[in-house]
Length: 180
Ligand SMILES: [Zn+2]
Image (tube, rainbow, N blue to C red):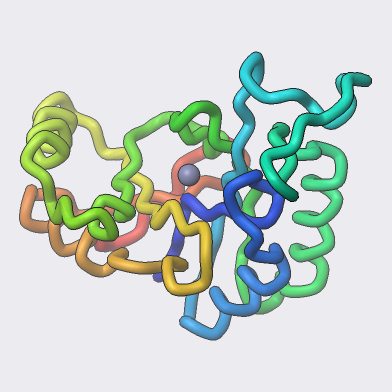
């Protein structure tokens, strides 16, 4: 079971990766499930339907995800590719990822910045495990093609080394457990 639960698309103002390409690339690398988690920074960026003029940084709008268009596009992807991959809708609020559930996310993007298995995150995960925590999602925080699904197998090995046996995806707010 390969799942990436933290993925950005063109709907985030720091990505130009078209959603359909994200889905097609995910299918190509054998992914079974993906959770699209574009940025929503309420109170910091403008909403598309705020009525105010959207500010731009160069050609890039500084705005939250255009929610109705976002949900419409995700539903379209579910209809077009649902027989090949499970597509879930999420959102990232100021670096807190909401995936219709509560748990802890192992974010593999630290590998991109050379912070491989940094000690604080291992200690937090150990503490979470010792407190009985079992709900763990794994995501790449991908913003461009090479990042999609990256280092997810490393994250799984790291979790196993810390004594975890399973990771989660979500379905209708409920965790679904998979072997690591
Ligand atoms: Zn992110």
